[in-house]
Image 1 (tube, rainbow over the protein chains, first blue to last red):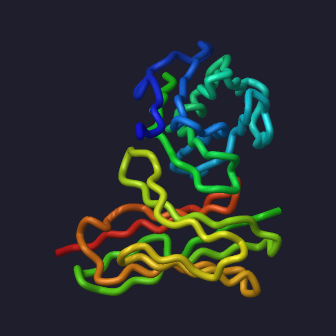
Image 2 (cartoon, each protein chain N blue to C red):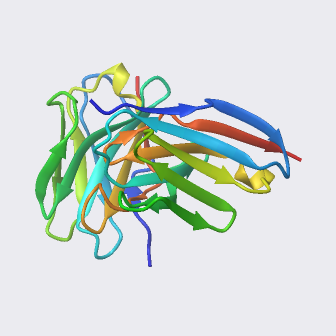
Length: 113
Length: 106
């Protein structure tokens, strides 16, 4: 069974630009969650999607948004990038939700210059 | 507000030692608890999931326990090996601990 995949793996953007990250969950998993990981703040929850609906949302500004498609693939978008958005962005999939076993992808390393 | 604390922040031990990593939480109305390991620059690998109705889970050399009354979970690693070197994180639903960085030297 294929694991969670994320594309791209590495990304360099300039301040003010926008970026879209993609996550393909494990086959059959309907929940996809996104996390931001930085050395200073650790792992922080961004949002969770389940069956194309946002079910939970963390404490991030509206510049961070996401969506989920009917095949459970998910995208995360960050607009008007700031230097502080540089981080490892991880997505995780689960059969039914974040309260259950989560499987993480390898992450997308975003650098904002 | 749920807070998750992991102690120690870092640990360096010789190969073969038995280890205990600690995870404390503040909200007693917990959900399932999951332990992960993360290798540098990589994603997280699930190690053990303890459901809120359970007291412990075991997988190979790993054993995780959950004590809701004291607000604590421990991850026990038996006979540590250099390949166990990684950062270990515990998580309750949406909240992750800051992790314990483990180094096992030969």
